[in-house]
Image 1 (tube, helix red, strand yellow):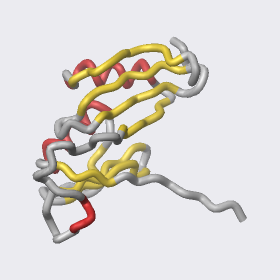
Image 2: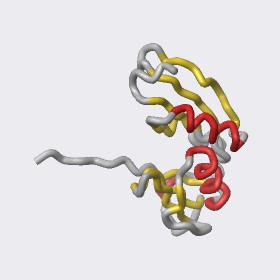
Image 3: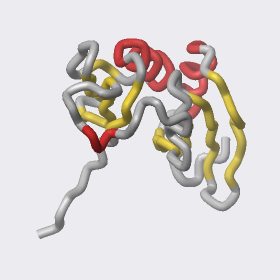
Length: 132
C-alpha cells in the first residue's frame, strides 16, 4: 500500500485574520476555520496551510515572536496549474513582489516570489513545462 503524505505547513503570524485575508486575496485560498488565534486555509476543499498567532496556547515550539529573523531560510512554495490566474490575483492584492514573474529554465516553469504580511517568502510556480 502506498503511503500518502499531505503537507500542511503551519506558520506563526502577528495577526491571523490579516494574514488569512492576504492569503485569500493573493493566492485564492478560502478560510476553513477562521478566528483570531488559528486559521486553516483551504484550496479545492483541501487544507493547504495553517496560521497560528504568535505566543498563543503555550506552544513553545512555534518560535519566538521577539526574534527578528522570522522566516529566515523558509520559502512557502505553492504550485498552480493556473499561473496566469494566480498572477492576476497577486497583482490585484498589491502583494510585495520580490522577483518575477520569471522563467525558471531548470524547473521549466514560471514563478513569482513575494513577501506575506509577516515577511515570510512566498513563491507561486506554474506546473512543469509552463513557460508562458
